[in-house]
Image (cartoon, rainbow, N blue to C red; front, top):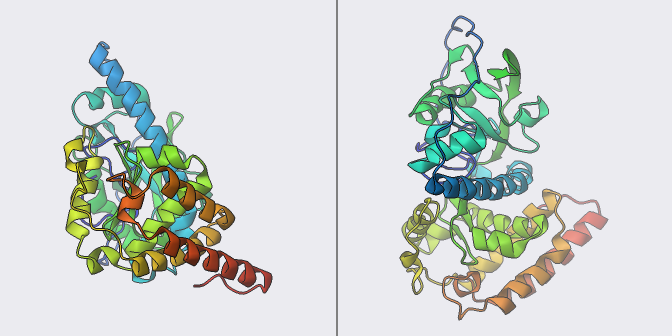
Length: 365
């Protein structure tokens, strides 16, 4: 969903990535309106599928692959965003803890692909549920159709994501629990969904094969190539946490690169990004070693607090630097070249985390 007050969610309009809306929050307060009449049962029967062309079949395959990657990214990110809300300081918000989409969350031939692959129609359906969130605890499921929130009917159709954000944002901001009406199995159900305090950063999958990750102060994007290189959930968590830490510490603003990196993210989350933008350095300056090390330190505490294994961090970052050194332009090491300095910081931080665990001290940097 394209909206200015969404936080901690995964964008998808007009790109292929699973997630867009309903972890949204608002920065203003609102009193809930009187409930409207209970909505009628929503039918989830979809219209007849279109005739499949070769182009449509390719779009369906691409959509399936990208949604699978985004789902995995969202699952790994959940504990990092929720368990580190206090470390994110004033960048934590109240979130609903799930994302929702309809077929219009996609563009062009991907509208039909979303209908065929994901069974999406005009109504918003739950696309992902953040592990550990209030939504997960009350049993919200992928595929649940969103009908109403606190008695307010939720919109359908081409602008449903944006319009639903306008309904949900004030409700999430002003209340600790939201009554959500969903359609499941041919009948309506009501769930009392507690809001979840979490780091308010949007997480995206980048539709490119370069081995990199980017953060612009509000968003974190990991390329498809980086996810495939990382392989394990622990390694993906190292990369996600590192860029979450850069955002918490305000490094995009400090280095005056928020606009440049934001443009790269905007491009790479597109269905068909302009890969010519990655020629050369793409305008990205190397991260100063002191800032990089500060993000490494904070990120490892985030990783540990989220339940991932910090012991493999040094091996992962060293393997990345060895296989994709700074000479590989638009690779991670080219943007973060102070490898030896970083590894030294990682060693010290991992040792400090072990000592704090042994002494049963809080895991706080």
